Length: 193
Image (cartoon, rainbow, N blue to C red; front, side, top):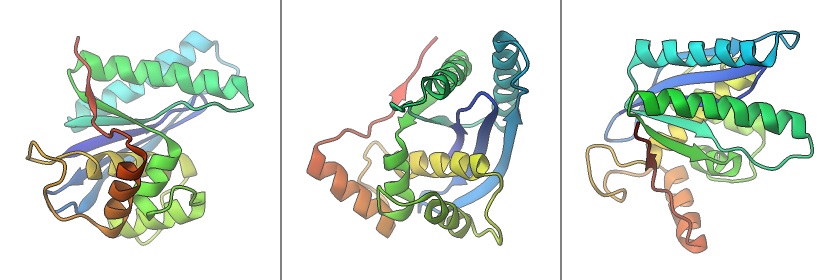
């Protein structure tokens, strides 16, 4: 399974692509950060990020797209930019008939580290470890995008109709247990044109 993960942002939008095998081993395919200048008009910034995401989708042909879910913050301006970029990414995925998963930061942290309140450094270290990288991907937006992609792949059935098949890592087992305890659903949604 190939997953394109997106850490949405108007100034810096992290995009990471990983391949995940049926035994849940993850391999880095590509990682980048799409940047826009804050002085540009909003519509131009959205267009630039959208074109960048579309080009990466076309180049890497992912099976699924994973996007960090917008959550409430005190900074409304930041939330608006994240929501706008998320919409652009959702549109690009839907236009290609791709499955999309939206994951909150705590879901991503739990999937990657086994702990939903892990700090950024812990997540970045685990991303490097899971992907077998000598260094943590930089900037943080790049590592976050990879974490989102890995989270989605680990929470999605690969070559099976059941999410419970396959070998689960310790982080996946912890996530699955936490999910069952709260009654949360992790089923990805399929967007259609």
